[in-house]
Image (cartoon, rainbow, N blue to C red; front, side):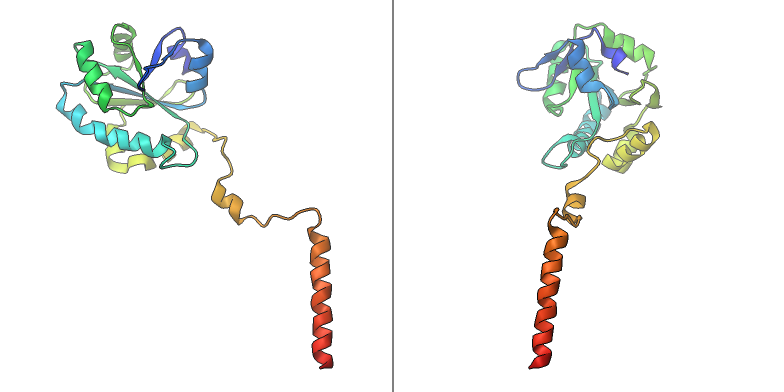
Length: 200
């Protein structure tokens, strides 16, 4: 799946619009992740309606304000706009961690043909190996929200690195090396108290 964007320039939708064009940067941001390719256009009313739903979906899986460990997910906006101004207008509404291809990049049209995108909005979901997990996830995202990511994860057999969550960690009965000695000490003191109580 990383191969799809090697030797390409991906731009992050932040204030500076940082470009990622080295192999190391592309691999770092896409490897071992489920990839969502979002095909849309500013002039499409359905795209405008779907945009806040997609933003909320992405935010709940990636934003530290909502989730402790961001999910292994990347979202790339593939613009089908007629002008760069239209693309820029759409990007202003998109989440700041979304990646996109520059308007002048002809690869946008190649991807549209590669994944046979005819209707918009379309969200093509890819496994980390590049195979298509779902050709259009728009209805699933609208219906199930961020819960559908769990199904994608299972289907893709994606293993999260954050295998221990904080709440699980807090519930563990952690013991130090001296714990058995301390327990023995407190046990013997309890026994002494009991003996004194019986004597009274």
